[in-house]
Image 1 (cartoon, rainbow, N blue to C red):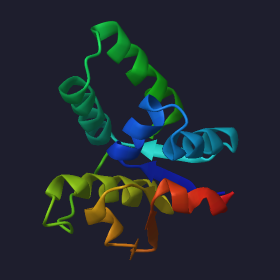
Image 2: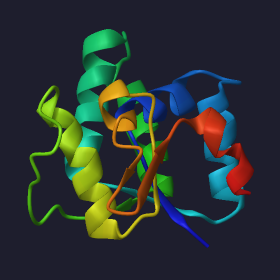
Image 3: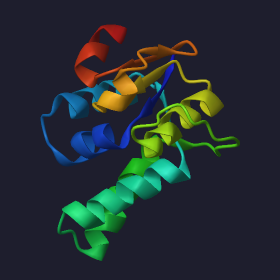
Length: 133
């Protein structure tokens, strides 16, 4: 069994767009009891994107966040890395994967995808992860 960290862009796609490849992948993860890790920093970024880019009521935001928190396991980032210089905010995704000992980061982010196999982490798109099952 393996574990994953979902980048914020995958969380957005998986939770807001019915039928997206990210959503189908998320459903497979949940059905297969694959451990999905996140961190308060990632959840905070997810919340910020929801409030900035979408027109949800407070009740809708609460419902969406509650759903996400029901399928992720939160970990605490203990040390910061400075690997991604072009977009330092992306480092929190790798930090979460390292702390949780996850094997995969699932993302659409070009900065993260450049580090295809960092520290034995496989960094791939949801579409490329379907063969994991």
